[in-house]
Every structure is written in C-alpha cells, then in structure tokens.
Amino acid sequence: MIGNAQSGNSESGSEVITQQPGAEVKVKVFPNPATNVVNILGLKDTSKADIAIMDIYGNIVLAHQWAIRRNALNIPISTLEPGAYIIRIHSDEQQVRTKFYKQ
Image (cartoon, rainbow, N blue to C red; front, top):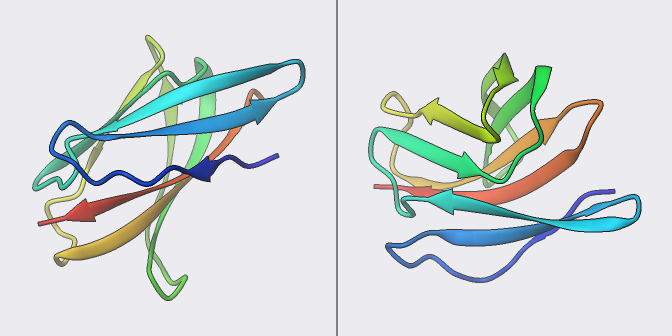
C-alpha cells in the first residue's frame, strides 16, 4: 500500500504517512524545497531499497538501489533541474511515495 503525500512545502519539510500492515508510519522529507540533497527520515532499515525519482510527468529521472540505515536516506539531487518531483521507495519492508521541490 502506498501513502499519500500531505500538503506542505514549507522550509521545514513535509510529512507522509505510509500504510503498513497493522501500523501507520510517519516519514519526514526535508529540506523542502531542496538544493543538493533531500533527506528522508522514518524509513524502515533494509539492505536493499529501490529508489526512483520521477518528474511531474511520471518520467524517471533518477533510479538507484540503496541500503537504508538508521531509518534515514540522503539522496543527492544536485543534477536535477528545478521543479517538483516524486520519490518512490520500494523495499520488502515498506513502500513510500512522496513529493519534494528542487530549487
């Protein structure tokens, strides 16, 4: 099940609630808008998570596979053009979809 991004593009970031079997998990995305790196907190640790960043048209502009450690992920975005993006994180432990803005 995939969570829906809540409205919020403040400097402090935005929160997403992902649905998990038996529990809701809050995920925080910051800074938002971002310039070089976007940080995601509240993820479940895993050795392998598929990360995809899509533009507003649904085109994948960045895809990578990373391990999630300490319930956090730092994604470098300095090569992205300014605009709105969607991050999709998929692992055996959870599925998250949220948005952020690149300055």
